[in-house]
Image 1 (tube, rainbow, N blue to C red):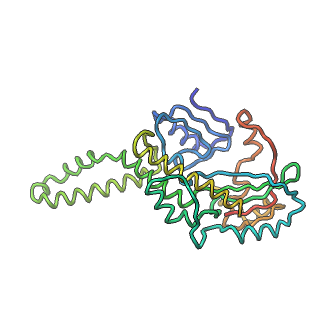
Image 2: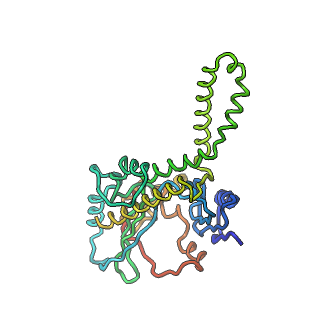
Image 3: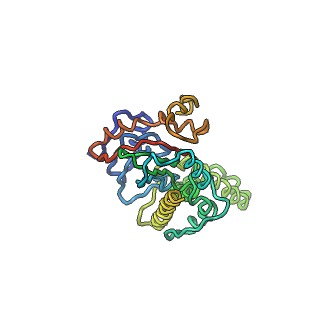
Length: 315
């Protein structure tokens, strides 16, 4: 069997994305985790084993997005949560730093250096938006845990889009477009060769641009041994390194239509938070029940401890 589905309740769109990915000849094994849901190209929560091909669209925009958790030798009863919340919000920006931050990262190609210069150097140690959060939880022994979810943010998105376009360009059939243009403009070629060439170049440029826009988030990949494949892996690792260091820096220093702000407030009862109408789509009910998720993949994981959130800062 080359596929495994750990979930009992998967939406049709999610299954369709997974099957389309597994229909690619280079994809030889795949799995859907119990919390899988529809993504841009590949479902979020899908795992694909590919033979010698890497897909930028599978990796996604927020390269290195993940969670880190650290146990603290502090009892929950010894913390003033309101003061801690205010301190976090005063020290850790939710968007960007006003001044650039310095950090030593892995080697990278020019596009990643450019992306870091545009946004990355202002985002190190910041939370970001969407489903990113800083959370303080207490464990079963009443000791505190610090949990952070973030990624490479706008910096990673620049890298992702660049390589997604490059992968898309490989599939653009320039010869077929030229043949089509030549067939339709024979008379122009006969009467004015210079105008014909100018018109053709403009046509090809637009055709290529339209193709990329229509297929940017498609199943377009690189051979991992090709120059582009090696370049992408280098810059992907660079962005992942940034995402990891971003989480470390912070530790140191359909839902929207169905959930109201009142319901969000009720669900966050007992948890000190900065929640607002801007993050209704990140309400607890927007996600699958964590106990059901863990039960469905019990042969993959071992539960060590259950953490109960007591403070949550949303991006």
